[in-house]
Image (cartoon, rainbow, N blue to C red):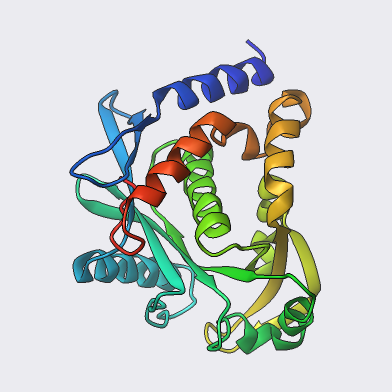
Length: 256
């Protein structure tokens, strides 16, 4: 079987295996997978509402950052303009990513890329959001897991915060991953991030392009086998996720 055929079958299996249904009046998305021992496992996607969830996310970030030689991370962003998402397995946080919308307090990435961000902010109609505090430590298939995480956050950001432009700050060694997998584009030059004492590249993605990428890449598997977009949710399922987001209180919603 060719790599393309394998990719296509796995993508179909992934989309068919996702479960989205109400549980205890909360929104949840359940991701089933088979571990190395052949045992059925599940990942659950949450919004971190409790101190335990946020502390667990912080612990994971600090452990992964320390392993990469970055030192300890600052505290997770808080407030109504920030939302931390977590991935759990057997009640253990194995992944996290935080979405923050621009406000009077500004964005964390401005500490390193103030002029670049301010240029986008000044454009009429722009509503900026940033992705920060990303960590993942699981042996589940990485592409479907990452696709689910990023797509859930994209849906949330566009509808809750009216986000038009997404930014993420990464080590230049990881820049190619985001460019190939999610079509982020580099902005400006590499700069030194004083918080983690490491070089950093600013990447940008226009929110309005995401649906187009999903449609184009899904229909062209031979040229998209390295992309995450073929693993994103179909349009009908995306709409269902957002509809149930609206039924849940903004800061009391969980994606499980």
